[in-house]
Length: 500
Image (cartoon, rainbow, N blue to C red; front, side):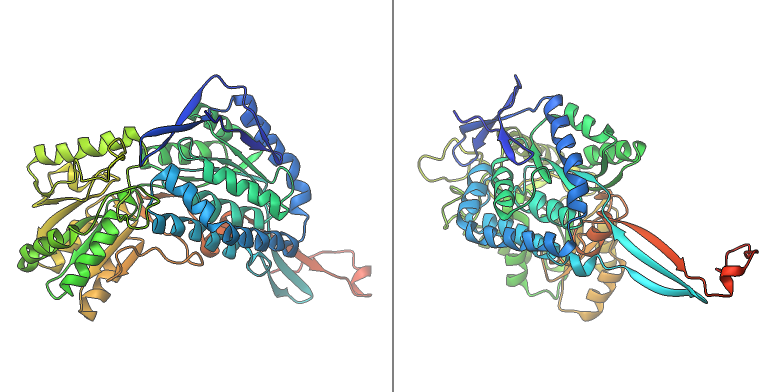
């Protein structure tokens, strides 16, 4: 059985740990290897390597740093099929979804190559004879804490590229159950010419994460995961004087109005609700449907779902892959049972889906739909993180919008309508940070911040876009004044030294 290593100071090292995480292929349920729960000393080794590499990397011109990231982009393209297969095998995304995961890592890298432009400062004529210049500078070591669901996009699209492009160094805590993709991309960074110690990758437990959160060399934390954990990460980072962005869970809703393009709307909902097995923080987990078309909507949903087949992730004919790991697979089944017990009507049952021979031990849940979900049911308000869709019926736009905004999470929100008026009203008044008008997964391209709201995000600056450059840098203002011949002789200075 393969035992993975950790990546520190440009080399893969064998861990001295006694604790190992079993890695599974979720399509088959087979154990494929083990990842180390790195010891505290090994995590400290990663932090110290990043801290040691920081001064030289910070002083490397931004143009030179960008050139290395251009090479990283080329390598991601060159190894696209290999990385896509890694994501399929360790995470369970279908081939198209896994390719998108890697594609988003490429997109984040493209954003990072713009560092020479996006790190530019500003200058102004502050007062007569005085100039003020604002610079953007790196801070030091950042830590990235990565979830299981996007093993390429999150560590190497959202976190590492802009971080290192700005002159910082990074310790990535890869997802302990899906670390292979991150480790392989770390290897590609080295091939591209990234100096030793700039990128370091470990797998560990929450105990070692506390070491990261408390270490004085670590200046900031970027986290993606559940809301309870994200809030704790944010609080502890702040208590230790570190900046933090914590991107957390969601319960995204779509408002479906009676004037929607019904068949196309249902196709969009199916893609949004069940894509990536529902295991994404932008999954469409609930549809708030106008009562006048609700029966037609549900009927069309049941009709189109029949074409959504389960199967091995790497089979290009598969539309719905497995849940990523066994523990969560059982949790999704328990949530479905809870929905039944709460009184929701199970109109499509995804338990025990039909599977190709040889995949009976995979962690598969088929498309699942509950109708007549009411506000008193937890199934409609708490994140399931699986292919489970809840239908909530409302009389009109105002009732639907109010119901959606009552949810404590606000990553994304969607409206399906042909009405420009309602589309505008929705965009203006929804709480969702990322809004879709007839777009089921309104994730913007990487040049725009991923802007969750409410309990879906803790922090001030989001990931991606210009927010990412502000998060991974701090501003420094320099005011300068040069004396002329007469002023050189002056023996008195104005209280504000000429700046008032």
